[in-house]
Image 1 (tube, one colour):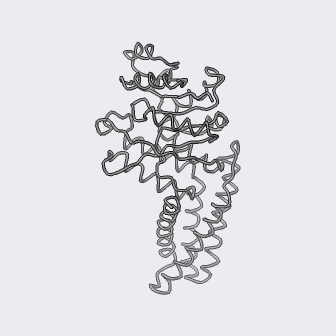
Image 2 (image 1 turned 180 degrees about the vertical axis):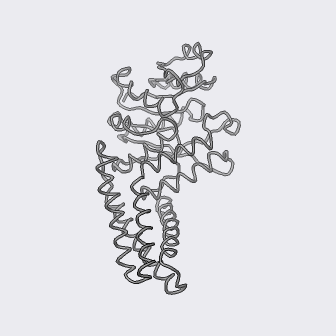
Image 3 (image 1 turned 45 degrees about the vertical axis):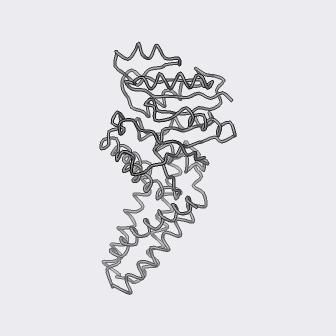
Length: 333
């Protein structure tokens, strides 16, 4: 199987030259995307033993990857799969080869999983912790690391990947969100965690890029957000006019609103041009979630006699936390 490694690069250092040399020795085709690097870097790019294409200016990692993916079959017509890797040396050639092995074994979407610990840079630990939580709740699927840039794909995924929104680091998160809702099986491969100088040379901007990632996340999950807002509005109205009477009926209606937005409207808007198979798992989890809401609300009502809206918000928070740890335990098992 012919596999191409796509490497986005912005003002790279010698690590990229070492990486491309070692990848060439392992018989990889290599496509480097110069993401608007400075003029002083151009002789450096010309010295690489790789095919190099360029963005006219610095557009971001996602845009660079999409440029490389869109040109892949033109430049390497015989390639059957591709791997995305970073230019800063954080992905070892050994691990890139392990991703290729999975692709050669017939896997079509391979995600590397780093072993994160307290010794890792805080920017990586905090960002990954938040994204793990939000991703699990959005897709009812726990991934221990959804921000690693080392990933492998069959070329059959090119078409929909180019349609995914995002130009910077947010694109990588959206790829996973969209893949999960298409029912694409993601094969996980543990890899070595490598950071140089406590990751100080990364182009990732902790505040700006994190906000961008989660802005794209909420845009992709917009109908789940709308359903939650409508649920809260309905429960507030119920609280003002009925107290606790008919709360089971109201909770059932809340689930109906969620199902309408997240299984029907979402299908014909965000996913109108992309395959959409949310699956039985997501449906079962949504029913379970709203059943727990009703149970916790009932308990709070009987014990504390608090307003329904307060009980519902508490139930929402507690159920989300419970769901996250259930998914984590299921994965770890």
